[in-house]
Length: 231
Length: 230
Image 1 (spheres, chains in turn orange, brown):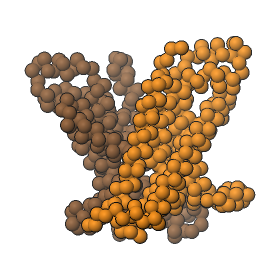
Image 2 (cartoon, chains in turn red, brown; image 1 turned 135 degrees about the vertical axis):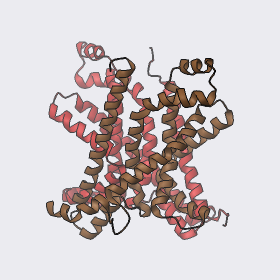
Image 3 (cartoon, chains in turn blue, purple; image 1 turned 90 degrees about the vertical axis):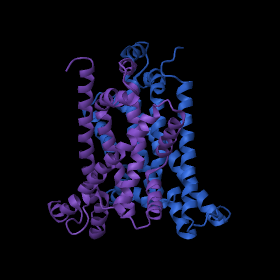
Image 4 (tube, chains in turn red, yellow; image 1 turned 30 degrees about the vertical axis):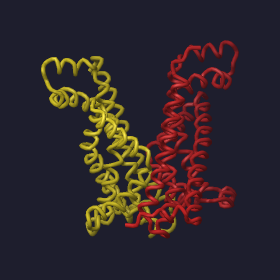
């Protein structure tokens, strides 16, 4: 076996690798932001007293928790174009189709988990907090914004960061639909340079370092904002 | 829909078996079941090593757990695909390659469950056992593990669900399982893609939802038992 890391000095392969890292990070960041937004919206919707709405949310969460992420990506990429309205389809196809569908699938997937984490944070807050917020004249959305969420977030932050770590690893699944993220680029570089061991080693280290960074951040945040804080 | 299911139902269920390897939903269950069973002994060693007082063992086990929990399963499958034939010297079938990768990957997660189970036991159990004159291994095997393992059953079941979901990526190296069948059917049919993938998603959905529910019921039962209700 040849152990030279010449692929790192070759500008072409180095560029491919860097591109892969950047797509992975963009996919990760996009899924985090969109996922968290959807999860917050869902938590707000849960306060609407409608049985049907709650049932739909429960179904949404169960679907995303019980179906493998890679199947969700395939459903979006291969299946959804059949039923999406033409206008939306054209709009998605204007940009990077694979990336957009992977981003949609990952965001929806993680939103279900984030939603559960936020819900369990909200559930842990005493009902008197909500009653107090409402009795001093805050509306439903206001009490959510100023009273419930700031407290709930502290309980929810550790599981949310744990889940984010899984999303980071799940971005590698986007390769099945041809998103040019890190894993996809690794396969491509392997096919051109045949330095299998080297490129696997480099990419594994990249995944390892970023994952450990996220895990460390999680530990830091839960130390800085402990759930049982007293003000 | 009926037409579709009567044509491809068998392919979804068992893949190309009996003319080829067992695939489809049965293949998924086989891969996940063997994966978890294979991971268990390794996870037991790692999990116990994580709670051990020997520094080297503890560090080694921690590195194992953190490494394999931080890398995507696809990367581990690629490693197995590349390393196994070099190490063994012969070609390794795709199923075994994926199985090895899943065993290594799941062992890290299972080890954490086992460690948590061991640490959740009241310290008095170990102290009492050591006071009775039982050695480290005797305490571990006849006092700690039996209690910890029965408390862990819901978590193990949840890990089985995760394993089932994780196996879906194995189709990338050509392992015959449910997602592989869906891809095959899709390439024969060319149209009605959403239908094919919805059936695939529904299979995972019902199976995993059922197992998760079962884990929840068992957990409540165990909680009740602990506080003396059942």
